[in-house]
Image (tube, rainbow, N blue to C red):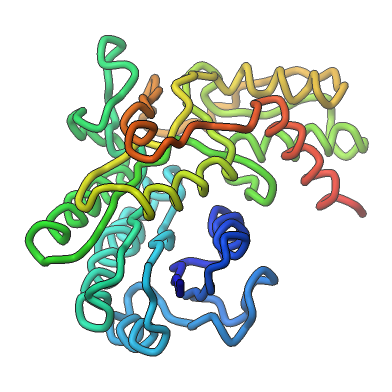
Amino acid sequence: MRVLITGITGFAARHLTERLCADGHEVFGTSRQVAPPPWVSPERVAVVALSDRAGLTAAIRRIRPDGVFHLAAATSVAASFADPDTAYHANLLGSLHVFAAVHAAAPRCRVLWVGSSDAYGLVSRDELPVRETALFRPLSPYAVSKAAADLAAFQGSRGAGLDIVRVRPFNHTGPGQTAQFVCADFARQVVEIERGRRPARIDAGNLDVERDFTDVRDVVRAYVLAWERGERGEAYNVCTGIGRTPRAVAAELLRIGGVDAAVVADPQRQRPVDVPVMIGSAAKIQRATGWSPAMSWEQTLRDVLADWRARLVS
């Protein structure tokens, strides 16, 4: 089949491209960047922004996809506090533009819309693990933008006649992630300590929140299975059901790397407000598709460390 990935230059999109190609699909993409990523042929990438509804429509009409994986988004929670407009425009209006373009140019294709567990926001211990029926109580502009777009995706599947399946990934990591995110940031710092480029100290934000981390390679496998087998209009968590603190992540990376260093909470790295705990239930996607995580946590962290060792070669 012909599939289109919006935001094909992104972290998860790289792994999704590899997965879809391995499954025999023809993969196309959209990107704001002129330079295409190395994992897709340049002629298969349409340079178009999410704000350009007409451009998106033209790209979809030209590509004629059987499926659209909508990954393009503003992804930084921290940046959304300083610049909420970008989060709202990219995540809510951008999704609406993609839905409108599909409706106009490829109304029969199936859309996999990628949301976020951040939409759940403030959850209490007695609500854990979080299920898809939980209320949205978002605590950041990013989370609000994702919650609103999630509802728009539901409405599009019911009120606009589109075939949309929603996924709500929890935190994920793996090779290729930028240091904007906690596991990659800690791995980069461990490698810098190894190579004598920084003192034996890992600088961190809030060390005691709990998050549910999944390997990105398991995440994109869940995306493909949800696209293939998920029910139209439904939402599916993608998670492990295991909570880990940044403190524990840092300790594990130091152990694997054989590095001795302090882990220090830096007030400058902390957000104005943080979700204390976010651990999900993947029971629904497991029932619907048979998906479950396959990568071990230690292997994920080993691969993240190896990736940063390769990146910081000079």
